[in-house]
Every structure is written in structure tokens, then in C-alpha cells.
Image (cartoon, rainbow, N blue to C red; front, side):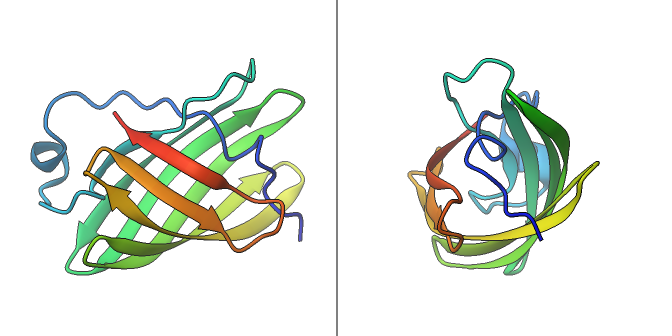
Length: 127
């Protein structure tokens, strides 16, 4: 399996307007649309998460500067402000999986890291 590079899991851009709780029907700070702001032209990554009890699900898409774009499906769980998410990315080259561990930061950020050595580390912002 190919692992997701930091460039493929970087900048996000989904348009969610208004209060996240009113969009998703959940009071969890994870239930919202998320993006990551980076300075790599042509890169984007956006996804929406929903939380029911402690189960997290979601989907999104990504592009990279010099790589194929694709889709991502997300499954995981949360406990308090902490979460574990498994991101399964699909491109024309195949499928890869990355696990993210982290916490919500004041409900406006996801702070986390990947279990893959070349995977994501940093912060993701809420729309």
C-alpha cells in the first residue's frame, strides 16, 4: 500500500456555512467541515465529519501539487476531546490507509499526528 504523503493530506476546502451543530445535528466539536491551510499551490484537502455517540464517520477529497487527487473516507471514534480516525484514501493508483490520533483544540482546530512516519502532523481548521 502507498502511504498518504503530507502533501496529499494537506490543504482543505469544503464550504460549510453557519453553525456546525445545525449542519450535522451533533453537539460534538468534531461534527463539522474541516480543512487544512497550507502554502502549496494546487493542493487541497477537505472533509466533513459526523459523530453519533462516540462513533465518527466522514468523507472528503484531496489534491496535490504534483500528485493525483482522490477521495477519502473516514471512520473512527472519540472519547471526550480525544479522537482516533482512520483515513482511507483512494486515487487512480490505489488505496492507502492512515490513522490519525489527536484532540480538538477549543472546538476550532483538530491537533494530531499520524501513525505513518511520513504522514500528517499538525493542525486542521474548522470551516
